[in-house]
Length: 426
Image 1 (cartoon, rainbow, N blue to C red):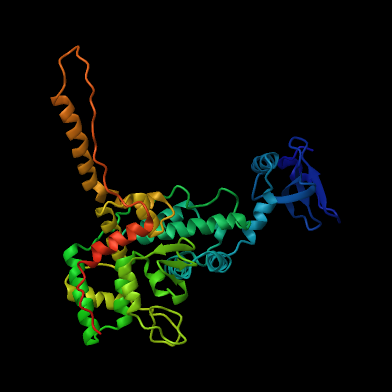
Image 2: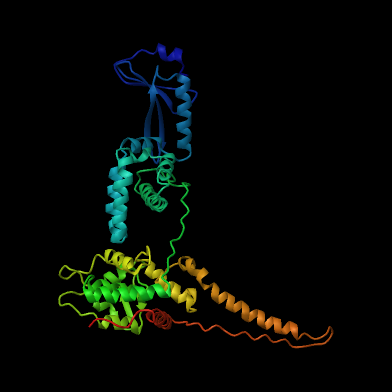
């Protein structure tokens, strides 16, 4: 029969469940139970399975409204989708809080560095769970993400880190079958523009830091381990974690052979000045680390606070520990080391990361421009009259650049160490 209000109202319940199929839309039916309950339903086949999906009750929906919904759902089936599976997934969807815990266990703990894991945990506990923790993961929409990131406009760096975290988490939700493919709500949410933090110590500031290091080490206001760590950071350009966790077994002159770093295993060349600092560090029995901490067998965990006190005494303003790495890079470029070599010295995996220092090489561009203009200018001045042949040879003086990482490392250390006072406590 054609399901209409008149035909449906005329149906009388029997002692068995009966399906009345609509002769206008194939797969659309009315289910009548022995209690007289009348429900609009669709039936379809997908992947060899027969599935039924409830649309709504007669009375709540009119036959035409039910038929429109049935036509839409059966259209999705024709395009390869399964409305029953989506409904089941929504009904059984986990909360955001549970998904965050799964993300930390199955992804962050396995694939991320400990420092990244800690930062993820902090962002989740402080930003994500208080806001979305009790909501179902399938209910989170793009406007939700947009509002969250907008509310962090006063902390753009944190907002971008949180957006990257959530984007990865929602991608994994699709992989785990918790959300449909292509439903990542972070997609198209714009990031904040980030201004690179550039702070480099000048030659005078390096000298002042060197004097303060000698002073605080001599009077005992700072530990020798902290002072040596800062010296190594300035002279090698390594990351803080690489110096903190440096073990004696990794020291293979003239290299540090690091089995793990932010960018994986790498080999860091070091100079004679670095070797002099290492020679002045006493090896501690049963402690494998170069920079030893207070706890037995452990490395020095806190270098930021000693550095904060040292920079205050040096009067150099707010300079982060990571800015010592920038200082190393700026000295490298100032001494004519090519950007590609600087990137290898710093352990960059992407050339774009090193390009943030490109503007520091402008001095060499001016020098090269002068050489080129001088040669061209001489040729123009000595040009023959029209019709006469002449040979024009332009001689350019090549820039003296160090091409190997070891040579570049030695050059930088020689340049930096001249500003560090040579007097050292016994």
